[in-house]
Amino acid sequence: MKLLLPVDGSDHSIQAARFLAPRLPHWTVDGGLHVLHVGHPVTPRAAQLAGRELVEAFHREETERATHTVRQILDAAGVPYRPAQRTGLPGREIAAHATEAGIDLVVMGTHGNGAFHNLLLGSTAQATLASCDVPVLLVRPEAPVSSGPVLLAVDGSPQAMRAADFLAAHPRLSTARTVLLVHVAPGLPAGMPAALLERAREVLHDEADATFEEAVAEPRRRLEDAGLACETRQAVGDPAIEIVRIAEQEGCELVTMGTHGRGAMGSVLLGSVAQKVVAATHVPVLLVR
Image (cartoon, rainbow, N blue to C red; front, side, top):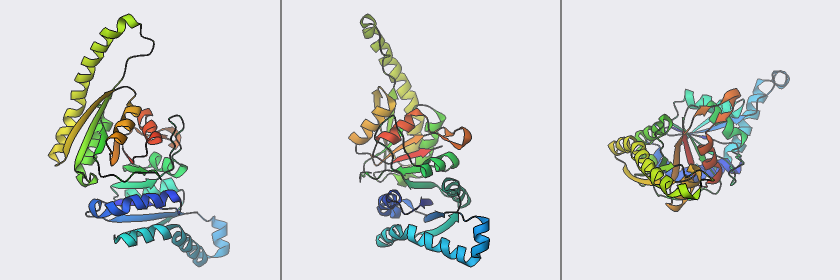
């Protein structure tokens, strides 16, 4: 599996490197790791005045400074990596490098936010998600060290199935070789009259059981065919809240979710559930288009 680690010298990219370093011998099987720095573009007029050699030296020095700590972390872990340098808008350049180099997974640090109502991924992470067709793993600074199962949120959608297929294609992403399939059915609507509650709960229970079995059956088959053990959890309520609760309760190594992909005007359209999960959990979140 080929991995791409974008680095900009920030604490967020350093944390992503620290998260990744001990996993690299397990994750990078046949393609290694690309460490990419995207430099600030120099205007044509400035380049003309300074000269090509000076501009190239500027970009080299900028990259050296931005990647210094990350290179130290990776060198100390004894893992090989391939440095890469581009200039331009970071999100677009990260996506372009991922496509051109045949990257399987982009790993990025992000500051995130603990509040459900305010998602702050950071402009580079948002731009990358908006431009990149390659799965992206978002790592928060407070990411816990865990070798628990990988949580896969399933809802019967094509997006969830693509996420399952990605895990099946890369089973070494799960240190424990175990995937926890989680399905969350919606709860009772607010304001329901008390006289209707008992019957509504019975109907909801039956519907939840039926949709649960349908949602987990095919992903579980594909994951088990790939040699991964599968466990399942069923919950009722707000999907994002339940996914975060189960992930932290079970000590999950990653949360994996399918996403809608690109929104209009280059903005990222994660979908409300994925957006809330990324904002609320400290567990790294793997987003698959």
